[in-house]
Length: 256
Image 1 (cartoon, rainbow, N blue to C red):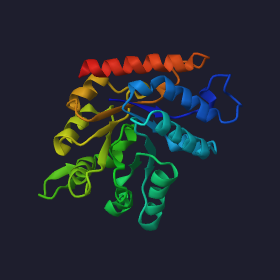
Image 2: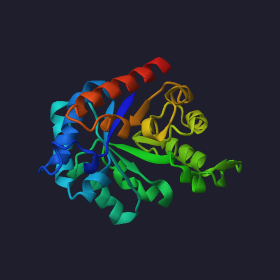
Image 3: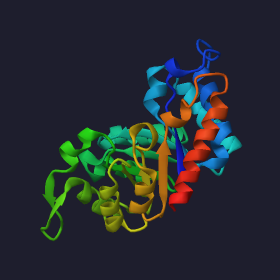
Image 4: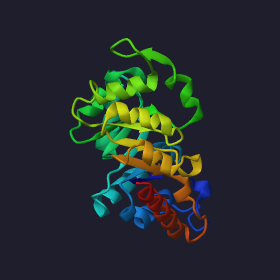
């Protein structure tokens, strides 16, 4: 159930990698090699690559994972949300340029902003539902009505739509933050066995045991990024990352 997020912040790299060409790919490759046998997925965050003008290194990294660890899917954490031809181009970016196995998307603009991604058979479309950040409540907790006229929160409406009328080919998953286990439980009741991507453990403080119990130990991808990536800033960073990943995986398995 452990998903390792790849958020390469060059300022946190070991001194031996700083200033080197392709240092982002090199850092992430070491992390991947150290943890691939422990994970259900890798989740590179596109902003860390784009901000450093390292999109080519992201392409190289995803190709490396597919070549050396073909059983491990790659989730492109992009949180795209746009309509029409623009959404189509974002889908091309995720699935044709980067060859990702899944992509995170923002449902705020409605189904037509997600539909282009669903045209790629076998690719995952992971919809933001109840996010782990404190400000997520600003909109996600607003009240709306369901099809029967009952009052529900926006995130509950998103969960219902994603599990039913939006999920035309069975490709959708949901993002639900570990910082809100009660909401994980509510979403699980709504969506049944639909897979959930759960960020927020580790540096964000989400509780593993509460997360696993709320998710009913079914189809969970529990993401940890910074706590694993930066377990050490020394030459032993990959070894330290592996130790932290094992610790996290074992805590998840114990909670199961």
